[in-house]
Image (cartoon, rainbow, N blue to C red; front, side, top):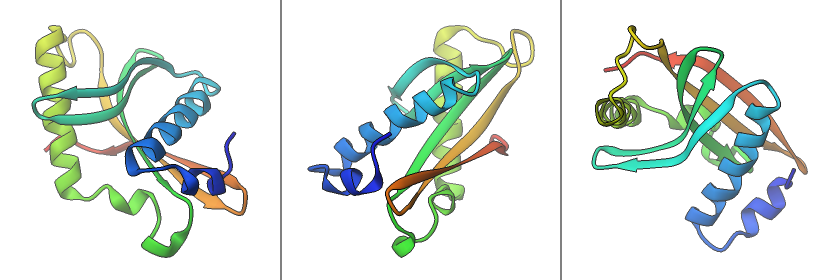
Length: 132
C-alpha cells in the first residue's frame, strides 16, 4: 500500500481522497466486503464507498490523515457529516428502490486511516452512527 508520505505529495485534496479510497476498498475487500459503488455522488452529497458485508448494505466514510496534527481520522466524522451521509444514503436507497429492513439491513461504517511512519493504521468502526 502507498505509504502516507506519498499521500501527502498528491497534488490536491481530491487526489489524496482517491488514493485513500482505493486503498480502503482493497483493505475492505481483503476482509470480505464486496464493493458495489465507489464515490457515490447525488444531490444530497457524497459517500466514499457502498459495500456489502454479508447481507448488510454498508455506507462507508473513509477518512485518512497522514499525521495526528489535525486530530485522528475518525474524529472528522462529526454530527454535520453524519446528517449529510444519512441524506445521501436515503436518496441512494430511494432511487435504487431498496427498502431498508425488507431487502437487507443497512449501516454506516467509518474507516479511519491514520498514518504511522510509512504505513497506514486502519480502524474500522462498524455501525459507527445511526441515521439522523
